[in-house]
Length: 213
Length: 213
DNA sequence: GCTCCAAGTGGACAGTGACAACATTTGGTG
DNA sequence: CACCAAATGTTGTCACTGTCCACTTGGAGC
Image (cartoon, chains in turn green, cyan, purple, orange):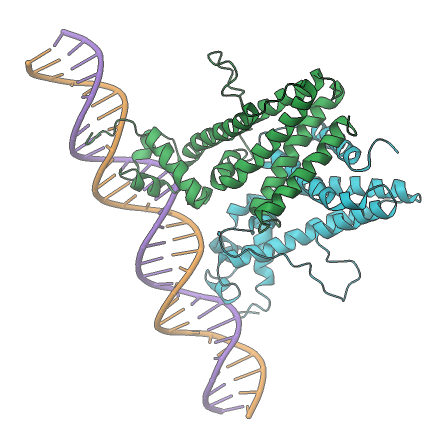
């Protein structure tokens, strides 16, 4: 383990992620990443075409982390009644999303900083349709989709409202996160923020399934 | 007008804004701004402490532009019935917000890129309480607040739901914009996006005022 | 007419992403 | 077991950036 690192690339991604957590997306500097990995600058160019490609790798990992956080809170839901369960799951998904975003602002930022850096390259999102795992490595969007499907199955959500609901839910929690992270709602204390979120999600639910059913 | 420019600062802000429109926030490079303004690099340091301060100035202008776009569409609403009018205003505000964000991605980005660049400096938002103008130079947030107040006055929105409604509305349109600008919804064509937005806002409205009243 | 000071200039420095040429290791083949 | 080619890291370099410094310019007020 002298000249050849063994598993650079993975080590670089890890260092970059750590740097992102502490200094934000702009703090991920190629030379600093190499430095902290104990390797000379330019070493990264053997594993990534350019900085952008490193960022994309970190973004993938961050997105997986977000999905994992959501799955964690979803699996903690233990309610027998299907309808009550579906509603609770939606709330948990939303809370998990915002919680992750505010707990890991750097990773959250990178996770979404990848798309459309240039007006070219639409950067397709692939559902990672690996048949090896049953329901792991599903993206955050897919997890939300599952919950909404449950709501439809259970009869609380009209089928024609399902797709708009998905856009609404995602936009809501994402916007809420961004506005608190890098927007005018920046300094809002955690307790107040939590109340806002709960109240907001209640309104969303009301829009989806109508008044308390 | 040879050595002394006359009104640099304003000229610099204008050039920076133009650069932001064409190349995004990261494209606003101090030296390039100076170059395009026909002035030597470093000239900007007589008017701005650092790059950050220039960006803030551009951000203020961008925020004003966003508010102006919203006001423009609001004033185009010409409906006598107060309730119908209030509902329509809310929809127009939302559409204007998203429309501006997607038409001027660079300015929109800068407008929100100012907050919390460092973990310090909470960057208070000031309502610009200049008593000179009646309702101009109100921020986007205040305009939304007015519309929601109208909804309460008209009896469509419960007073205790007003504040959560404001958070919800803002988060919704902001998240929608960001997800389409720099998120997984990037490549979505305009017509489809417009449909999504309309459907989403309908759900929001349903959450706020209940079923069609 | 002279002086002073704000406004603009030119040079320098450290830090960055990217490229090219060179060095070292490793694994596969004879 | 020897050897070589490809993979992996390194050193050197370039253009560019933000920011600091000392210097110059020119107009406003005495």
